Length: 296
Figure (cartoon, rainbow, N blue to C red):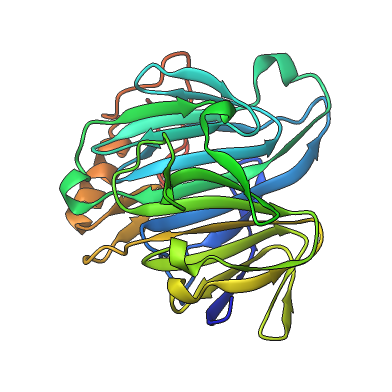
């Protein structure tokens, strides 16, 4: 981008039995618009005895967006949802006042070699909706707007941009966009963006102001309207952002809120296992720094 203010590198993080690349939050930039958290999963090659197993864990005050490039994940939640997400599809889970969910390798893949690769994202809810009833939506790949424009392939995964709206039911002004190019070319898309904006390089590279930027970087723009850069051959980037909230957001573990009291209540509720259980699950992730043998 022609006005890069911050460059964020992926940092390794463990989410149970699986390592990810953590992108947000970052000490110098906690959020971009309403986006509060981004993990890059993989690409991880898992053998026939290795599987993703994240037991039930809670969320409040946010929506989660799961988008896979490769592999499959079985999502179960306390609403009774039990669904397999596959590459190109979107799982959009809104926690609101509280939800618990698990993420595991589907049973039919647990004894085969497999690859898992994708993005997991948290979008904070507006203050007025932080305590809304939890919801879950699954969007098929065919229903996500995609088109070719000036030689690049664009997909609007969530939000609004380019005069188009994704069917993912977001609760504040935002955009999450995939852009792919097979050849080197310059893009200037600032007129289609608003609020705060950032760019994540999945593969390939981009050039801006004479600098080359390669994969596993997030570039934070000073001004979304000045979003101009050159994509190299065979490059895929994700642009995300939107209008920032007027209030600060606090993050503790899997909880996001504008009021620390909401987080304290969620902590206590999870300790006492007051969250609605996830059907078909018997174990759970304990609150950090608590007794792992806490009974459900």
